[in-house]
Figure 1 (cartoon, rainbow, N blue to C red):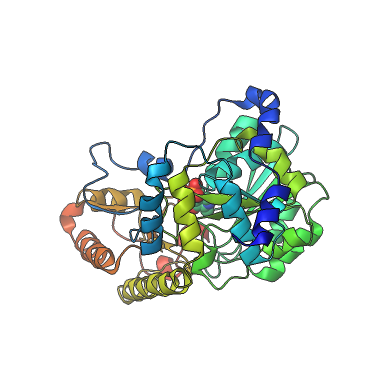
Figure 2: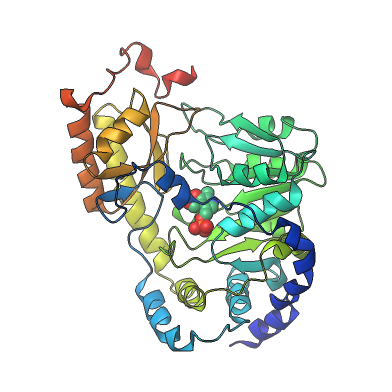
Length: 404
Ligand code: PLP
């Protein structure tokens, strides 16, 4: 291991040192931590076997871990009887070196759901609201229910076009938010919020408000990452995950990237838990594979572009996604289409109450998306599917007419 990495590990905020916070954290020991698979499962018909059918419902990556990651998992299994306490710190140090970050500002977790949840718990309260975009990833709102924070949902700007976060409205939503959550690219729309808007948020948020910038899907897009705000000492926590492009949703690995004093506030809520060594090994191998990001980014982008082009040719609008999911306007209650597809073993994603006529579609393998096209055509053209007829064309001239 290079010496810079060695010293980084010894200097950083050690995982074991979190134990000393355990007493303070015990009051918060039991809380629900809702994640994408739980939210996806909640919408699945009760009879559905998750092993049957095509699942483009949870923004997973069916490609799974890359070859080097699989090999690394196999190689480390014999050491599975050990905690290997420092292994997460080594991983974080590799990431920090690649990104030019202070290693003390990177903390590894078993996925990004934990630091997301912990950030909302640590920085929101009855008097410190959570501000979130709508439609947006709902997981932070579940944590806010635990902290008792008001949840202020701000509609996406330009929903019929760019569908980005309305940063000015988010800043105006509260005079003292605990957390402003920015998901970039956004789940479920797959859309990007311009860098200038994020800079505006960083410059104009109240002094002690935390901007939680969730970059779960950043590798799939050309959007500029927000890690530089951490380097500049801003009140920003960036989340990264290996669940999406890297195909490790089931293996579980992610990072919180922030100033050490901010990490010190979230770490006591669960950062002391040793990491699964198989996941750490796979994550390390993935970071060291120079091909995985460009190759998969292109594969997923090609499949997304082809699917969206086909939908457009069939007169169905989608959000302008740059990610592995998009919202599809089905011109009638989304629940009906979701159920009709599920009856054909085609499981698509959730419906957000703000956009009831849209479904979130995850970009799966090319073969899965071909099967989706067939099932979707069948459902939309079948009189026996029991669907509400579409809105008359003159009303449906906008992709998301219920918003107008
Ligand atoms: N953030 C966003 C925006 C997500 O969509 C997800 C999962 O889908 C997560 C965080 C959590 O992912 P994980 O806990 O698997 O890292």
